[in-house]
Length: 102
Image (cartoon, rainbow, N blue to C red):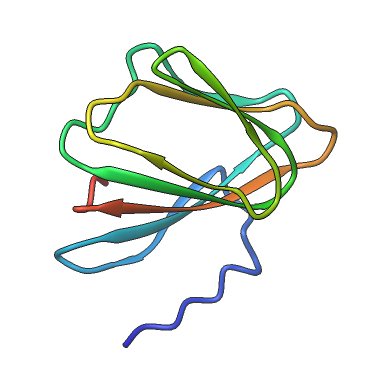
């Protein structure tokens, strides 16, 4: 068992734990900041993105999805994606990669 406290998320992207089968990371985007883009994809990993706080959009394979607290998004292997903070507060997420990608 592992217990990881993510309450002190401060870095842009931090891998916070993992096993041979999966990996967890936290991400914090400042207002107006984005990450990823038309070339960004994980070849062999599912990425589960859970919104802790803030708001934004995810563009997955040219489809725009609204991100708000409590949203859980699955980005499947090979899907291109970009995450953008469209709000006025930090967009804080917890991301799980299965299998690990970082």
